Amino acid sequence: MTGTRLFVLGGARSGKSRYAQARAETLAGRHHFVATAEAFDDEMRDRIARHRADRDARWRTVEAPRDLPAALDGLSAPDAVVLVDCLTLWLSNLLLTDADLQRAEGELCSAINRFAGHVILVSNEVGLGIVPANALARRFGDAAGRLNQAVAAAAAEVVLLTAGLPLTLKPPAILR
Image (cartoon, rainbow, N blue to C red; front, side, top):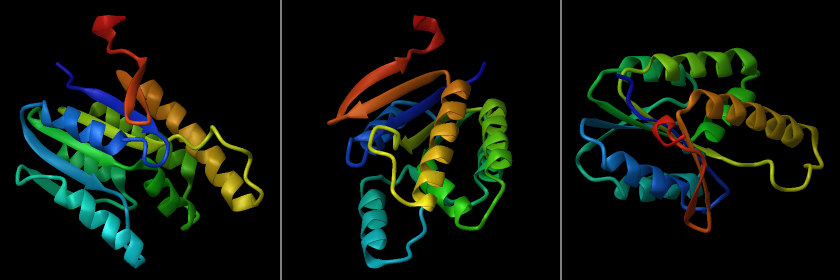
């Protein structure tokens, strides 16, 4: 039997990380937090420290700023509970290294599909605002939209967070 395949979307400060962690903590197993952020400045270091402080001793942190599919493959086990936070930071890391984003997206979705335990993925919904004025921001927005669509298709359940409130966009198959 395949475990949870949950995709949590939302804007900045929408409550998506808190929601995803709470859902993960309801699941039995070995808990792993896969961090995609890199601390390049004090603000990001503070943000990472706050997120880390929110997790108790059951969580093991794995850093995967670029090779997320390999990290998922390495953690795949029937008793694994993996929380990936967040896909848009991972995408930014790849975009800044001129990686093949379409290939990376495909590899991530394949890793999600073959994952043996529970996997919960968090991403920013960036497509609700105005079209950005510069080319890099437009490229990022387009790539994030494509990535979110692909991961939503691979997920068994998709939840959008707004103002801390979850809205189920794709209920688990058992409820459909």
